[in-house]
Length: 551
Ligand SMILES: O=C([O-])CC(=O)C(=O)O
Ligand SMILES: [Mg+2]
Image 1: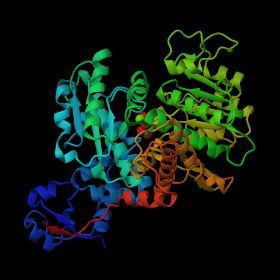
Image 2 (image 1 turned 90 degrees about the horizontal axis):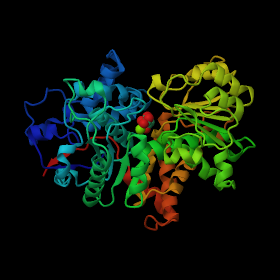
Image 3 (image 1 turned 180 degrees about the vertical axis):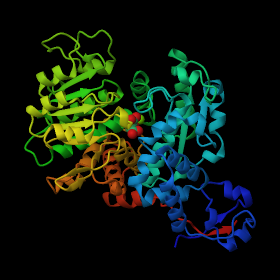
């Protein structure tokens, strides 16, 4: 039985405190002591009973978006119940509170917004940031997830609606890695939107202007980062769904200054490398012997490619050899040194040796390069056509194919098609959940190569170790930590990733890898090996009610 807790607030204020509220689980004695008489229906329920009732109601709702809205209402009134529902059935709840439904929720954000959560720092408030962050309600914050809503999943600019993403990501820090929700804070940097639908919508609830750009944008971000660092010197600052043009420069500018992390660059890269290593498990081959076609030259594509190069370098390849294993395409086809407009990251992967005309399409690249690994981070649904996939499979025994874009309509291919076009030889993993496949009368889970296998563990590792930076080698360590718990290690036919029901173990594995690497690089305090597990366990919060005593 969890120990009692001294609680100062009472009456309506207690019910309105979503971290303390227990709804009908307040005992009759507590209702008496805390002035709740008359405020609640008479029944007293347990957490389990509340979970049952909520799940039964959710099941009857007509659409995933309706379930998402209901879950968010529960989260905003009773966080313990919200996380108890996630804990009970993460497999069904995850696509509701996270990708793919979160995409729809961001698109409908202005219409479904109902209650304050997190912080909205808009351009007109730029000189009030410090004052806003100063509220003592945020004293316990350890992890901030921030977006400016410019590149939400594969859905582009969602303006203030992008706030759905930090809310969703932070709820996974808690659901997957047991981070106490009082340590988390979602922040929306509202610098406008260039989405014409939002700008012309009378319902839009953000700052209704074109996006602030250039030096003004950069100084706004700088002001924000400084305010965050001054307020919480040891915070983990997680950037999410910024545009490709901003994501990398912000990461590079801030990562030597504080503990920052970009999930779309580093998280996507770590999970992808982890799943690739799992796919190579038990085969007499190394990563440096693979040929990779990377479809998408945004922050995810560049981030994954850079991490693959680092890993190949650890296998002994030179940087040039490693880069030569990668063919990167963006919307205009293969990137070659003839391309006029490339980001700094894309330039690293532009090929000099392409024999044909510039701008080769995916089929031409696959035909020429004969890849063993095909990764989609393009945001373009259906790019992995039958012709492309059959061409790849003709040269490769076990094609590794990851359509990682999300939500579902943006995935480059569906697991069912990819398996059918490769006579079930492909090793497929997707960025958004897909239903299981039926094969020889068996059903097989589709591996979800989503950052959700990485970022919660990174947060847990940072909190447990007290790391003050997230280095490239910590990201490599996270990928290795994930690969090390792949079911494939013990079963050649096993899935690449552990099931969602084992998310906690995955987070602990990633956290341990992160913490050990942080220690090796001296970016956290020394701790003996035997202290690591207790440190991690001390960070784990579980959704359960405690008895309350009047303070
Ligand atoms: O949120 C997800 O599922 C993965 C991700 O970071 C993105 O697509 O931007
Ligand atoms: Mg993202």
